[in-house]
Length: 175
Image (tube, rainbow, N blue to C red; front, side):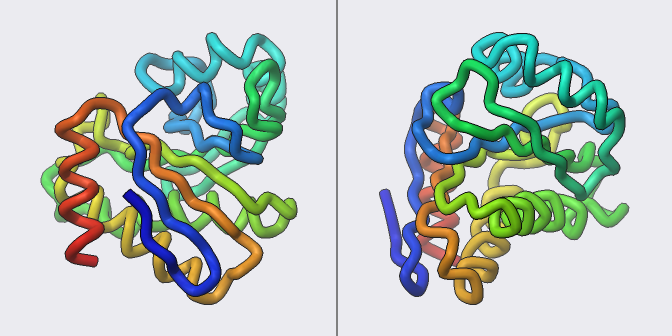
């Protein structure tokens, strides 16, 4: 499923983020930038030790922010490590922190001349963010950014599993 935002394309696919041929993929990272499970573990396994070596040199990334490393052995040249919030009921600034993680990733892409980027659904795995709420925040944030940033040609959400894909598709129709 895809929509056009200005001159850019916003696309939803069900699949494996480690297999994307975009300029950059986004990793659902933790503040310490240490290898975890889920998306983070998959990216680090597929990309090899170079990604973690660079992340270790950076050392830290606060929630709501993002940093960039090489793509190692991935098809993507870069990995943008975005730290989304742990969901604690939705009344502790989680929505703004989640939006910020997406926005900061896109700002890094713009600054580095990255025109195609693939995102997972940030914070919806072990961090417990409800997918329905997270999808609306993610899609609205990306659409708003693309309106003013035509240098980003493609934003692809690579979603794991049909239920997550369907939830994002429903949210995209509403945003």
